[in-house]
Length: 625
Image (cartoon, rainbow, N blue to C red):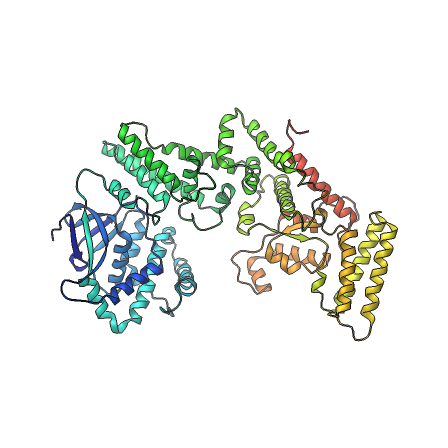
């Protein structure tokens, strides 16, 4: 069937047509909401005579040979209709995806996949059906040895197919009406581009300003368009293949969270499929305050147009992307730079763009390392810091962010100096949204519910008071005040009929706890460490030795043991930071006879001294004495 440049054609008129989706386009990414809307729109269309029809948006194509077209725009809609037709057992047209060979095979054989039982098409798409299909896909993909089965295209094909199949089964009585509407009354604006323009150029024109297309995919199309201008066929093919391989390698490396969360603080899924965007934004120096998702694409597009107008030989520079990636990758594999730059990125001390400039301006690597140390030192102790990171004065409640920064740095340093093969896990830190502060020796007295808990607490305080007084950290007057208040609380617990929830008893406990906090520096840096929030909430009311046992036990458990012990179904076990493990192992305590029942005066002094000395050692440069 011949079609003019802008015809209106039905689905059944596409019989025996073949469509080719080139690799400059994005893959299939329609969500269930878009699939649902298309299905219901087709079903609810009311026929009003021979001239009425339901019109879809334009299908932009370029003829390749008889009945074969390159699909420039409209592949999301045409692919969804292809899956619907498969479910209806109708073979009208075919589609080939050049992005992944597995996608074409998966799509063509999709009806061989077993349906997912229990899909309620009336349920909420986001909160009920989507999670159900995500779980089903994970189980399905696990059965295949081929690595390329589990990719974004196939996942969306799978979800669309399962939902369409369930929806058609649910609409069984209306199935024939729906099928007739689809084949005869759904029509597409057929736009067959002509002239000298490349398909990629037409693709760009149709997608300018569209947020649906990711920035990376649009920029990729510009590079492909530029490479296609090579006249020598063999050379053009070589360059395109090389570009595709390099692009895929970079993207694959950035998909590794240990690398990605070294160079980025973005833990969202917004860039999950196109993390290479980070490199484009760095090259184009996108301001942090700019929220335009296509900022760098517009820069590249303007540069591309300007070069064409001026007939410049030098156009879009793919090499600078390669060089930036290689630079980041080199830093990632250098343990010293990894820990320095990782901390700088985490704290937002400066940008990767600025680090790149600094690196290019230094003659030798050691100068760059010195500059990184000075940047961190200035951030912590420079004029702008205004003593906010003073280890002696920061306190819980008033300086939490500063304490977290100090303890993160202390953990990084412990990793760096403990073993040449250890690397601090920035991915765990960031994915767990930072670690929360945990008091090493302290209980939340508001949570006490029984007399036995209070009596155990009193014995713990007495042991700690004896330790602090022997080390002359607690003077005689304060010791007497503490002993007097302990006696008052103990006396109250002995009264007949008094329970752990007695109002007067709770008041006395709270008053004693205020003295404990003051005399034993409960909220000082020397009594704080970092823990993930799950573990923190479970150990916060335990005594030191109980807390120690539980934390170390969690650390040595396997994931299966952890989930069984705590009746969880976690995919990843809580992570115990190395300095926190060292605290509860009394690793920093210098005296020989170590008491594991409490966190005493010497323990605290030595811990604080280790934090201070290790930071000074780590950041020591020729310019810092």
